[in-house]
Length: 155
Image (cartoon, rainbow, N blue to C red; front, side, top):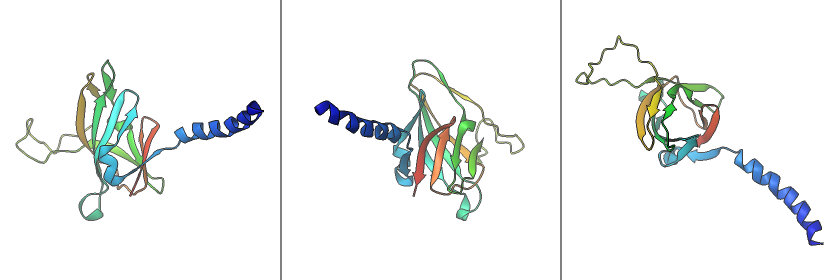
């Protein structure tokens, strides 16, 4: 009798458990910097997300901290990090944010194109980079890395 009751109960619970893993993690904008996301061997944390530039106009930028949890070197590709706005408009990482201080080495040259480069991260190390986005971020937004949905960012 117990087996007869156990089978229908398990057949209802197991699909709910499996489908719960498919749901994206909902993270508020204020708690975003404290929430790391796993993408393979990389641990990605969004330290800062500026949804737009000055006075709500222009493009935003994103500051990410990426750590390598594997025993071998891993490569971080910033161009694979994307956000999808609430109206399904994709916002891409387009360039490293330039420093406007002229006392940097090498000297800042606005004529030099800024390109996204893949970054090799040694085991146990982490990097922190700031990137410009291709547009304005409107919440709620979905955060992707390499075709994997990491989270849904909400107000």
